[in-house]
Amino acid sequence: MIDANILVVDDNKSVLSALEILLQFEYKSVKTLFNPNQLSSFPKLEEIDIVLLDMNFSAGVNTGNEGLFWLNEIKKKSPNTSVILMTAYGAVDLAVSALKQGAADFILKPWNNERLMATVKSAYELRKSKLEINKLKKKETHLKQVINEGKNLIIGNSKALNSVLNLVKKVAKTDVNVLITGENGTGKELIARELHRLSARKDEVFIGVDMGSIAENLFESELFGHLKGSFTDAKEDRVGKFEAAHQGSLFLDEMGNLSLQMQAKLLSAIQNKSIVRVGSNKSISVDIRLICATNCNLEQMVADGLFREDLLYRINTIHIEVPPLREREGDILVLADFFLKRFGGKYDKPSLKINSAAQEKLMTYTWPGNIRELQHTMERAVILSEGDVIKPSDFLLHPKPHNELGNSALTLDDMEQQMIAKALEQNEGNHSAAAEQLGISRQTLYNKLKKNQS
Ligand SMILES: Nc1ncnc2c1ncn2[C@@H]1O[C@H](COP(=O)(O)OP(=O)(O)OP(=O)(O)O)[C@@H](O)[C@H]1O
Image (cartoon, rainbow, N blue to C red):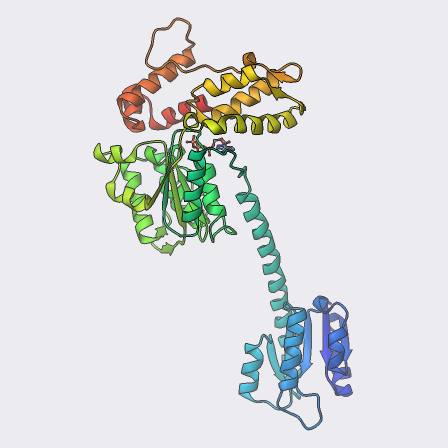
C-alpha cells in the first residue's frame, strides 16, 4: 500500500466510484469530488499528492477549458501536486496545452486500468522528486547563508576606509574582476566579502581559497577538482573551488605566493571561464566573479619576472588598495571599542572601559599587524585586565625590531621571524625566493608566517 493522498474530481459519479475502488487497491487515501468548485475550499490541497481531474464539467462542453482552468487553480494553491487530466475527447493539442500548463500526464476515457495505474504511479514519483528538490533547495539556501555569514561587519569611520567602501559599492554591482591589495590584517577578506554581499550574486556562495597554503602538487585538484582514481589519494570524485563557486564569488587570497607554473594554470581557467578536472578531459564552464587579494606588490613582481603580466591584467580590472591601520587613525579607537565589546561579552567582562592613557598607547602604536593585531591585543587585554578598566600595561605591544639580529633578549621564535623578515625584504616580498634563501620550502615559510600572525 502506497502512503499517498489521491483526489479524483469528476462530475460523473460512476467514474468517481470506479476510480475510487481501483485506486484504493494501491493507495492509502483516495478522496473524490463531484463538483470542481469545491476545489477552491478544499482543505490542505498541498497535502494531496495526485489529482485526477476531468477536463469537461458543463453538459455539452468538450473544449477542455474547464479542466485547464482548474489545473491552474490547483497549481496556484499547490504547485507540487501532480495533476493528471482525463478526457473522453482525445485531441493532441489539448493534451499538449495541458502538459504545457503543468499537468503531469493526460489519460483518455475509457481508460485501461493497468495503464492508468502506471500513469498514477509515475505522477506520484514526479511529486516525490519535486518535494525532494524543494527540500534540497531549502537546504542549499540555508547552507549558502551559513557559508556567507562570517564576521561581515566592517567597523571604522576614517576617510581612508570610507573611500574604500565607496569604491566597493560602485564596483560590487558589476561583474568585473577585482584585486584587493594591502598589508596583512588590513581587512582584505572582509572587503572581498562586502563586494560579494553587495553584488547580484549575494544569494550564491562566496568561496575563499588561501592560495599560499596549497601545495604545488595539489593545486589543480584543489582548484579544479579531480576524478576518482586520477591519483593515489583520489578516493572519490571531487569538485574543486572553481566549480563550488559557480554563480557565486571566488576569492583567491595570497595571490603573490603562486609559483609561475600555478599562475599559468590559473590564467588558463580564468581566460577560458572553464576548468578541466584532474583525470578528465571534459571542460566544464564556470560562471564566477573573481576577487583576488595579496599583500605583495604584483607590479614589482611582474618587473622581476616572478608574476605573469597577462595574469595580472586579468585579475586587476579594478584595484582596491586597503590602507594600513596606521593611516586610518580615526578607526583605531572605534575598532578597539568594537573588539572590547565583543571580548567583554565573550569573557564575561561587559563593563570594561579603556582609560585615556591606554587609549593614547593604542593611538601612538604603528600596528604592523593592522586590525588583526589590534583584535588580538584587545582580546589579551580583556583577559589580563583586573577591575573595570583597561590600563596601558594590559596592552602587550611589541614593535618588531626589524633588521637587528644578535639581540641577546630575543627568543628563538623572535630570531626566526627576524630572519624570515630579512629574507623577505632582501627578496622584495617574493616568498619562493625567500624560502630558497632560508633553505626551507615555500610551504614551511608560509606556515611560519601564519604562526607568527596568529
Ligand atoms: N574594518 C574592520 N572591522 C571589523 N573587523 C575587521 C575590520 N578589518 C579587519 N577586521 C578583522 O581583522 C581580521 C583580519 O582581517 P582580514 O582577514 O580580512 O585581513 P586580510 O587583509 O585579508 O589579512 P591577510 O592579508 O593576513 O589575509 C579579521 O578577523 C577581520 O574580521
